[in-house]
Image 1: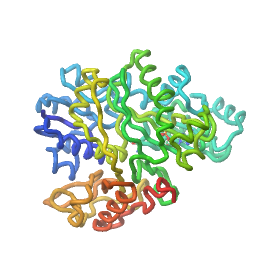
Image 2: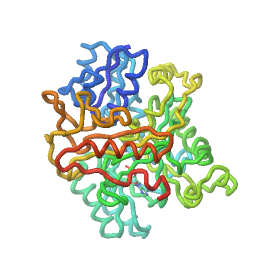
Image 3: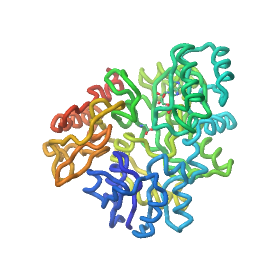
Image 4: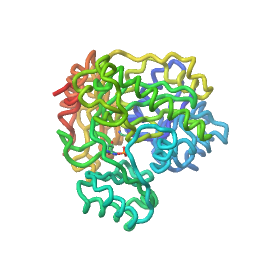
Length: 451
Ligand code: AMP
Ligand code: GLY
């Protein structure tokens, strides 16, 4: 099978890596791809993922057996619909289902209608009404979200009324996020621990993958600005068997059923961003004790949805896919044929950790074009090629050398028999790679280890 992957970050590198292990894969292409992906797939750097006509033209030229659409924007813009109309087999939801990520007003209304636990909220297009509501709620922090896609930056957690008011103004009046912020969601702040669960679904059956934990803030101890993700671990030890059962019944199955009932069957990978809150729908103490670690018990009480994404997370894919023991091509086929219920998806019992090496200054201003040392010609860590895998997020290959080409540059990833072993190997590999002004967090996985 010849497969065209759309996207060009660490997530797409992880997808290419997983597909390259399938005996069914002959050739991989990636548009635009990046320096590291080019070791596994022929890349087309001039075809951006949001250039839908360019992607269609490329697909018509290459005639792939499958197109895997990985990033949010082309999914929300309807690339899967366009590819299907042309007769291509695809992985990824159509636009009418990708709206789960594309519009927070849509996803919140869906959860309200179908009784799926999430933070209480209201939506607004009018500044005065939003401010009036915030004043009446008088509860801080207050959470203000742009309705549409905003590169992960459209959420403001305001600590007081003044901050909340200026967040509303920046979105509704100043147009900070353009059209994405012309409608906003104001919602209750949820206190708790976050867990990510990615799930395969064919619109009828939902099969959760191993859980994971992202580290969104730029600096250690969760300080600094929100980023796309500075590192991940899987599985997330706080996500116990008991919590997973609760999520299955109260969140995963109801979401899939709700989307189908709305005439928007979701096929692909659905990302559940969850908060293990201290309040909310309660779970019985006996259930807590059945599977709970101390940390899970203290944060349990109810799991609520923070957000849905219509795709694999980045860098969640980098730690979840290496633990997948079933052929990803078989899963893609089962989803397309709506036979996911017949497929037994197997996961390794190991753990995986990914440490992101970013350009100094990210997520704000940063420089690119810095030569990366410590990588071999395949973009892997020379000194740790057997114990770690380096997923490239933002790199460029030029004359046999790798250069930085983005905010997040590398996702240095390792599998171990437990989380500590995985983290040790990943950090050891990180220590062998360098570029000017490289920045990475030193505490990935620390919270999960209970430290
Ligand atoms: P979102 O784009 O909706 O996932 O939000 C980005 C991040 O903001 C989440 O991963 C949370 O860390 C945080 N966040 C969003 N909504 C809430 C909320 N209602 N309460 C607390 N934190 C939130
Ligand atoms: N790592 C967060 C995301 O992919 O949305």
